Length: 296
Image (cartoon, rainbow, N blue to C red; front, side, top):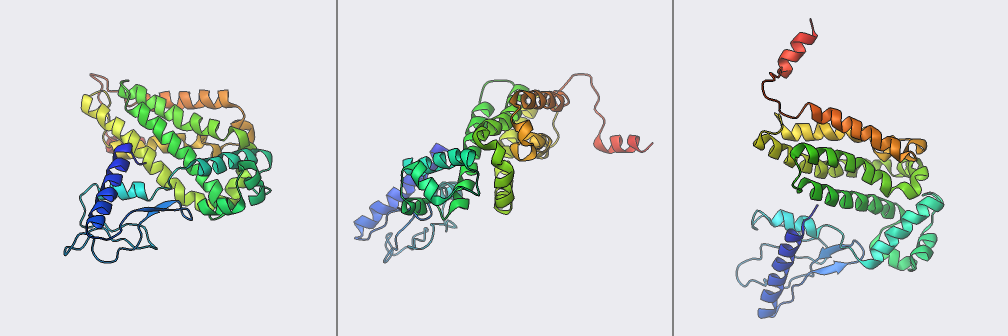
């Protein structure tokens, strides 16, 4: 997930390149390509930086992706550039898709339905999305992007590490439940159609969440509040432990019982974190020793 500072830095780099181009009577400026929803750069005729070759290759048919000669934070900037640029029209299409998924389901929803519901033409939809499947996947992406913003806020709060982790575990489940409340009856149908594409994205979703959890675990370990050996591995384990309560793992009946899901995730979070809180005078058994004892 891209932060505001990285986006601002990226804009500054692009603006500098554009200014240099004008000074050399060249035109170099990023352009938003509606077809993909990404920032592109028009072709540069000659080097905008004079005799020295520009470290950023700009072609009209590709994303700006070569940053081998750029500073370390270049990849962070380009990650932001490779993210669809939010626009009122794009958001309106995604909002309409969420409503239609609840009323008609994924299979029965057509692009004509989507155009009428969002108040735009079919051509406009194609300017932002390749088709109905991409609209649905973008809707899922948006849920995760908003969730990561919530998790970031919790991770940056002044609560104790254990309290932050507990709140984050509960949030990652309930936020998803609340986000699909309008169409949870059609989730099975949706995932049946989009499963392959969704599974490719899911690892990226979990990687973003895992890094936030690992950050809090590292802070808790450093302060002595938590007893943690491998923050990154443990962060992954915390996610896997609560994945069974995410929408795609629950039946429509379970998804409709939010109070029960909340109780379950809070109980699970308490159990998971109880073993992490550092306690004085408590001798912990190593994993190797525990395995040896279990074989007796």
